[in-house]
Image (cartoon, rainbow, N blue to C red; front, side, top):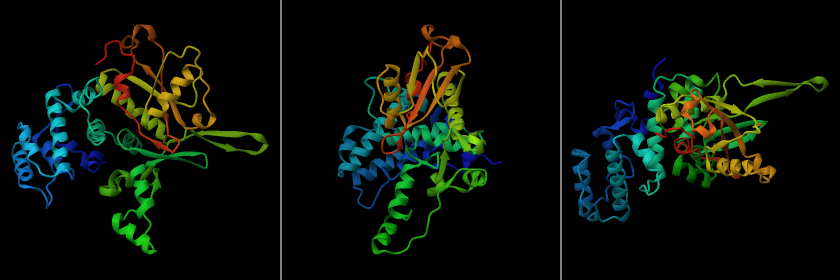
Length: 360
């Protein structure tokens, strides 16, 4: 089987990064050129002479210092702002020495403000290299949750997670952009763009055939288990052969080990029945607030509880890597959607909020 990372996610520039002794990713000159070629920074017909000169200079020498006056000389306000944000972010990454060190530093108090796009593309590149030897398509699809917002729906008892940007675009334009929007307005029939749940019959297509705009067209099943009602009041419970939740847990294990250097085991849980519950963290804003309320014994509305997609139980392979006051206790993780069915996972929470004896 060929390397999945060679066919996926080329828009994040992961192939233009090298590894340092720790295995963290160091940008090359071509990585910065990749960013300069993105739509946010690429030259357009209306680009002024100052913007063209700066762009050309950076393409020749991507890490060159840029005086403030060179940015201020750009006539277009948006182009001026985009270059200023990019250069501030570039300088922070260069000073940190790696994507990982810079990413972790961005969440410390007083750190520079970084647009979500920059953070998501950093995570995308890190995850792509983290899974370089991975051949399981469910883990690759689950990894998208770390940097792509999802739209979650419950259908026939199944919890399905699709890329929100793709689903919203298909809903508005049938996947044909402005042309599709115009055709819809005119009442014309549009070709149907296929959205399918990742399964045995589509796994190979996901890994090898979905590149470009179609690469986020697959839906991940996040259902805990399937229950079939049998005659005589019996219920047959079946664990899914390919669980999206287990795949996500495996990716998060790699994420924690990559940043903290500790081995953890993460398992999906349908419920928490632990009278000695000591530590928890949400993997998103919604679950963070929900777990806090449950831990404090506050009443939580049924509708809000139903937004909880899953709980996870995290344990350390070596309890000595944990803070002394919670050593040997599990850490509970939560994953929840908003009232609108949206899910935006925050992988940085696993960098900031684990009870580590010696934080990385």
